[in-house]
Amino acid sequence: MKRIFAAIAVGLSVCSLTACSIFYPNWGATDLPTTTPSSSASESQTPSPTATPEPSETATASPSSTTRIEAEVQVLDATADATAQTLTVIAQVTNFSETGGKCILSVKAAGVTKTFAAVNAEANATSTQCFPIMVPIAGLASGSAAVQVTYDSATASGRSPFFAVTIP
Image 1 (cartoon, rainbow, N blue to C red):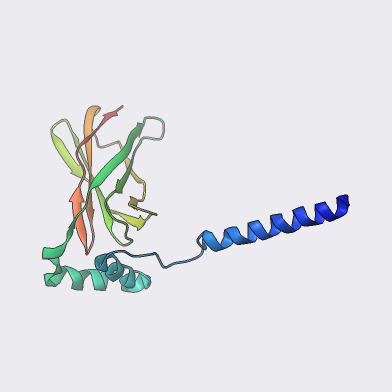
Image 2 (cartoon, rainbow, N blue to C red):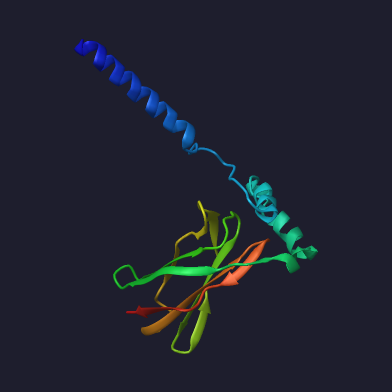
């Protein structure tokens, strides 16, 4: 009798775990669900990595620039590490999810604003996540500084409010 209950329990466990795979996404999937026509247009451009610059140039030159979304950029964290001599900034776009945009860091310290090279951004479940932005602090003035991240893509653009950080 115990063996029958054990077999039933194992069978139910296997069935319930198998059912979980139906409700959770495949981690290897590349397509994302879309809710707006603008995000599906950008997703159709991103699968070919060699063609990324060409579609973005065409989209920028087209009249779609008047229909660009205002990106709500948020700096989540900005930390200066004296040991590693780096400034690390983490940012995201909170009002949509897309892959293919760029995040550009500006640092204002001692009255001087420096802009650094862009990093890529990728779609998250409900937002667009900028790759971590890491820059050397060697050329930045010590003391109080403010960082700002600008997001730019074929479908959206915007910038974050300034975020305070202390440069060692």
